[in-house]
Image (cartoon, rainbow, N blue to C red):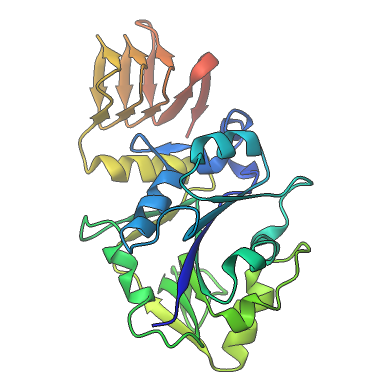
Length: 277
């Protein structure tokens, strides 16, 4: 197998997830009390890709938060003038990728690992790869939807050969136009099946759905949280305080639910910010 670098794209503004993403970038929104970005990094680490020589993270919107969160765990590529798209983000990393293939993941993709072993669910992305084809992790297209690739939809990760990466511009563009469709046209796009759960966490409803999926029907309460009320089928974050009732909801770290409150199908963030779904 050809040498591969891991890249997690974390530069997006997450406009559809506002007002939550006015506080933190989408990549740092917690799902099951784990930041989406950390879930992606753990998945790459499960494939042996870890550290700044093997993994890169790009950042643009609220970049300082992403930079602090990543620290020295990965090479950081900051886009100072705003996000330049999935293709532009990879283009800015060409000199770092330096001849390797690139296993690229979207930070906002929630993948429920059917094996519960980090990385094993996407190991097929690398198995037997010759370094020439473009691979895309996919599931069947949802009923009533259009687009996709041969009846399948992208589920968060793609594998790009160096022959494509080396020609990518640093200007605003997306991988659909610069890599995926061209590869499809030349017959070099391989669609890899993902048999787990995939959720694009771009909207509050889907973000809540991902959190509920992470609970596996129960609740996830951080040990530093204080709960004197009731919590059912919900996620309660670090140092949160729940005095009231929480059902099928997410309480972010340091957020509070008063004794007089009852939250259902909601997301509570610090400062009493509440998003009802």
